[in-house]
Image 1: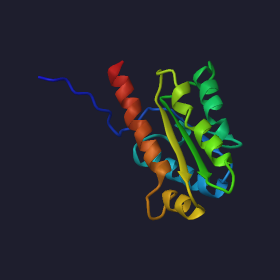
Image 2: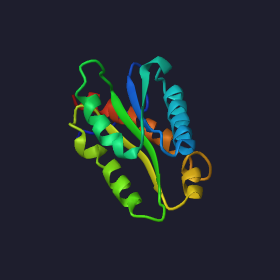
Image 3: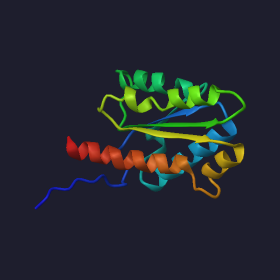
Length: 155
């Protein structure tokens, strides 16, 4: 029989780090609320969630790298939350490209989940932060729980 591994969405005993961009805070706070709701609903204690605020999405990869190298903090998974909304300049492309590097700085020791929304408009961002399109923060947190369990299963 073929072996199958799959992470469960049960977060009891897990410790999670959520790194949140403060830029576009009216969106990122909704993403964070969604993530906290997911953790609570899936058994992660509030005291087992550490939130780190960074100025913007550009700072997410370097913060992930620092957290992964920390001797002080150890986590089951790291979630990165941010909102990059296209404006009239090429700044959007630079910031969204840098934010996407969170995966490339991951060393494979714990899952690093990309919960940064990149949108063409404020309206799209609002939709992805808890209205029509669900809450991408909630989705990122449930993915983190599932992946933390999968990594534990893999060993």
